[in-house]
Amino acid sequence: MLARNSRIRVELVCMCTREQQLGDVLCFLHHTEEELSQKQDPSLLQTLCTGSYLDVQKTVAWFSIQVATIWRATHRAHLYNVKVLPSSRSCKLQLTDASSGEKVHVELLFGLQQGNLDLFLSSQNAEAIFTPSTTWPQSCAVAEKKYFQYVARTARPNSCHLSCLRLFAHILVGMSFSTYAIKTIVLHLLAIIPLEDWRRRHFLSRLENLLRYLQYCLNDKLLNHFLLGNESMPDEVVLPPAFRTASPLNLFQHL
Image (tube, rainbow, N blue to C red):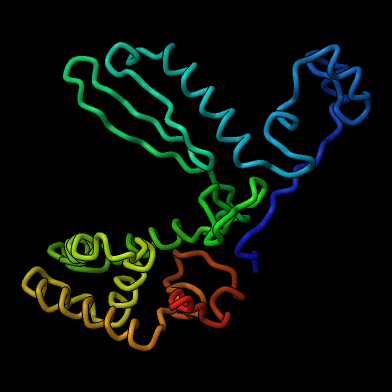
């Protein structure tokens, strides 16, 4: 099973065949650093990595430069002004409508998929106060999104689960609960309460269930990760067997 925080090792491959056939690149393995620096621009390996490991901050810096450069060449450049905002572990953009002045903020995270699984190593910050630039925390966001999609397909068209999620999150604004904890509570209730009982007429009852479940979790200082140790996930959510059978992870263990 993938560790919660990992590093991504990048290895050089021999480019001799391409060098001989096309002559547009020197082989990184079979030329000295001096030869490489004299005859070609720094490689992406040098630009994006620290040592042999992919560096989040370098990746963000490189990508942000590319976005700003490429946007100016697009046919929509005259419609929106794009400003890259300071950020070390994501690409944050501010798009300003050239005619109305309306601003839209966009945040792009980077991720590397683990095989064909719905688990990624992400550029997001880890739970620790300091996250080294070569550390890529594990993200279950795609797996959780696919579970929500499964619910949307299985539930009735007038299901209120997303409305409950939005209002539940709004109620807890400013109370120091992470969005991840809020989403986890909703996921647990979706798995516990039959989907036929999430119709629009059940909205207030389900919202009350969410608040009571939160109170229960706070009293016991226990909120288990939704995916770890959950053996009843639908097949379309692709997780490693060890993930399903792992011991639950308490998201409230810090309380």
